[in-house]
Amino acid sequence: MKMPRQSTSLRQWAWMGGLFGLCAASIVFAPAAWLANALDSQSAGRVLLHEVRGTVWSGSGELMLAGGEGSAGLVRLPSRLSWELRPQGFGLNVQLSSACCTRTGPLHIRVQWSGDALSWELSRAHASFPASLLMGLGAPWNTLQLTGDLTLNSQQLAGRWSAAKGFDQVTGQADVQADHLTTALSTVRPLGSYQFHIAGPEVRLETKKNESQQEMPLQLTGFGQLAQGRFSFTGEALAAKGREEALTNLLHMIGQSHSSADGRLRSTLKI
View 1: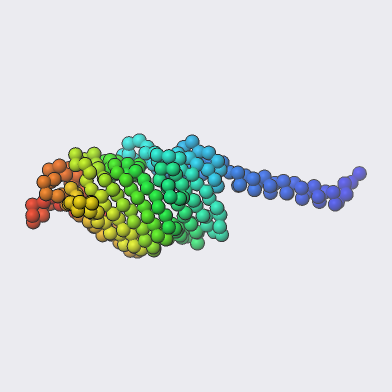
View 2 (view 1 turned 30 degrees about the horizontal axis):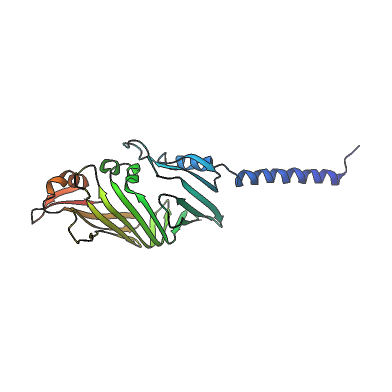
C-alpha cells in the first residue's frame, strides 16, 4: 500500500525542520571552548582563555597572555573576563567586562567586515589594568618587568585594518595613562607617571607632573604617527640629575644612549 503523497511531504518537511533546528541550536549554544580554541589558533598561542564557561555568545574565562618565543610563562588577568557577542549585519557588537579592570562599566566594541577590510570602533570607555600584564606580550616587556597602573580612556576611537594595507586608518581620541611605574632594571621607585595621547593617526608621549611639581626620575617624551599602514615613533628618555647611575641599565635597554649638553644621560628610541 502506497503512502499518501501529502503524508510523505509532511514527513520530509518535519525532517528538514528538525535538521534546521539542530543547526540553529548548534550555533546558538556553541560552547565557549570553541571561542577559546579560535583565539588560541588565530593568535598562535599568544592569547588564551582557560577554564571557560557558557557559550561563544555569552561566557567567561581566565584570560592569559603568552609572549611567544623568548617569553617566560603566562601572565593572567587578575579576574575573569566576561563577554557578550551580538551579531549585527556583517559584524559583531562585543561587550567585555572584568571585575578588576572595568569597574565603571563594560567595554563596548563594534566590529564590521567589508570585503577584505575589518573596521572596529571602541566607544566611550574607561578601563584599568596592571602594568605587569604587558609582560605577557613578550619582548621587551618581559625584560622590563614593569609594575604600576595603566588606565585607558577612549572617546570613539576607531580604525580599519586590511590584509593589503594593514592599519591604514585611525580616528577619534584616547588617553593611556601609566602611573607609578617601576622596572626590574632599576632600583628607582617609582620611575614616574606618563601619558600617551592618541588623536587620530598621531600619538604623543609625555611625562606627567606629580602633585608637588617635582621632576620625575625618568623623563619620557615622544611622537608617533600612522601613515600608509605603517607606524613610526621617535622617543627620548632622560634621567633626572643625580639619577643617572641608577638608570644607566634601563636607558641602555630603551635605546641608543648618549650624554646631553648638561651632562645628563639620554636615550633615543626609534621604531
